Structures are given as C-alpha cells and as structure tokens.
Length: 418
Image (cartoon, rainbow, N blue to C red; front, side, top):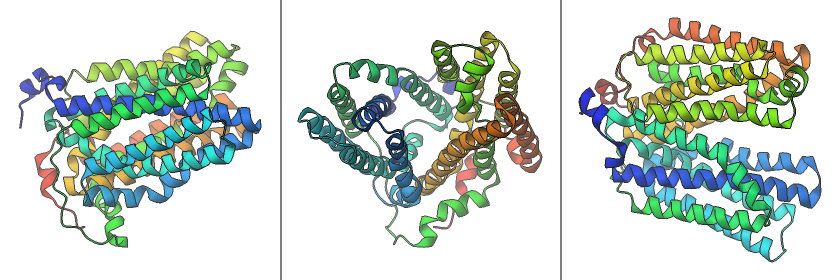
C-alpha cells in the first residue's frame, strides 16, 4: 500500500490503464450528452408533441429500473471489460443506425424511440461493470483522485456536450449522430486497450439471492449503508435545481440568458473542485469532511432559496456544485474500497438505482412542494431538510462520522455471502 506522501506525489497519468479508462468515459459521456440533444430535437421536429419527449425519458428509465440488479450480477460473474465492450459496441451500432436512417430519411418517432431503448438497455447492462473496474486500475491511495478526475470529466461533458450537440445540429441530426458514433468508437478502442486483470469467480445461477446479494451486503455494512442512504435522502430533499426556470423568471427577474447561467453554475463549481481534488489526496477525517460537504450543500441550497439577487444565486449554486463534488468523491471512493471485488458489480447496481431514484423523485418532490407553497419555500425546506438529515446520519452512523481514511484494509477482509 502506498504511503500518504507517495499518494500525493503519484500522478494519475503514470497509470496507462486509468488514462485509457478516463478517455473512454470522457468520450462516451460527451457523445451521450450530444446524442440527448439531437434525439429530443429531432423527435419534437417530427411530431411537435411534448408527450414524445417524455417517452424518451421513459425509454431510458425502464431499462435502468428493471435491469440494474441483473446487470450487477453479470458484472460479478463475467469479465467486466468484455461486458463493457459488448455494451458500448451495441450502443455504437444503435447510433450508427440512427445516423444511417436519418441520412436515408427513413426515421420516425417509433424508430428513434426503439433505438434509444436498445441503447439504454446496453448502457444499463454495462454500467455496473464499468463502475467496478476503476479500483483495479489505480492503487487504493489515489482512488479518490481518480474518482475526482472522472467526476470532472463528467461535469465537463454535461456543460459542453449539449452546446456542442446543438451547434452541430445546425448541419442536421446526422452530423450529431456521426460525431457521437466517432466518440463511442474512441471509447470502444480505449476500453479494448486498457489492461484489466479480473478473474471472475466460479459462475453461479442468477437466483433471487445472488441478484439481491448487493442489497444484503449494503444492509450489513453500516458505513456503506450510511453513505448510500445519505446520498439518497440528501439529493431527494435538495432538488432545488429543478425549479430554476421559476427562480429565473419570477424571483430573479432574468431571461433565458440568466437561466443558462444558473444551470451552468453548479457544473462549473463541481468541475473546478473536481480538478482540484484530482491532484490531492484525502488522507484524514474523511467522514467529517463528507458530512460537512453535505451540510454545505444544504446551506447553499438555503441561500439560493432566500436570494433575490442573481449574483448571490449564482454564487450559491457554484458552492452547491463544489460541495456536491467533494461529497460524491468521498462517497464513491468509500463504497468502492469497502466492497470486495467480487461484490462490486451488485453493490454498484444498487447504488445506481438509489442515485437515479433520488434524482428523479427529488425533482418531483421539489415540483410538488413548489406547487403547494411556492418555489422559494420549497427550496428552503429542501435545504433545511438536508441539514436535518446530516444531523441524524451523524448520530445514527457514528463509525462513518469518525472515519479517518477512505481505504480501510480490514473492510475487504469481511466477505459477503453470495
């Protein structure tokens, strides 16, 4: 195990497999963000119905809900790199079909939705395997930095990908699909080139017990349960960003340009903090830092809710994104390091269900509260609720609060029942 000093000095770029992994994730993330813009615009241009835009979300949500746990079982039973390659190659074929059919003027909303559904199935099946690969590509001492570097690339893709997709769409949706296909091809090549030594355990049938083993593992590990449930409830209560159009128009009295600034502020904060964390190691008091970051997220949400000035709202959202990045890096690294390799796929699958559910339900909760009480009170309640959750979780999970380091060698010595 590397010492703290060596962990600080060791560069992520010395690990070629991580560099290939990072390039693959960055390429596919940019491609997916561009694809989302093109698909929505093309379908609305064909039908003119807002309902069809909702169907795009449904086509992506159903596979993620139904197949996430089986995908976790697959990640722990088969060669993860091959699973990722199969998933990404399938996505590449779906994107190529979108480009070809668009060029031939043979597209309609059903064809596009069907291909998005296929792409979403492949993406769901690859996700636990992809997430479980990272701990094998870098030493434990710099996993948090690797997680931060990945987080920064995701934030960059979410900021620039839609804009780039919209710019390319001027030349037609086929231009976006072709560019996206090239990016996914780069991702496939990078994944195929990285060295990943993973010996899957003897294969077992996909029984109810094996598929849901990740749930049992999380329930029996207080630190992992505390981290995942903290994320679930904090995001569920802190979904103020879903109300940005209301704040921009009715409270801050700005136009679309202001809304664009508000939407981009959290990503900018997360991006800068992610880059900062990618060059620094978290070596002590990680539990307290995590709780403080989630509390900072809650305070920033409260400031945003009470703000009547655009500059203050932007500053609050910037801080919100930064605090969220710190929390995400610690939570993601801790879950990966506390989970034995043979369980990482199934645990990652459960974690992804919690994250997706909390994001979607958080937006719903914010919308419902805003309809009843108004946007500012709804956001303020979310910020206060986040602070209450932090206080309760610090009391209910004392070992997590006292946690000093991300890497606890004793954690992996406890095997979970399959």
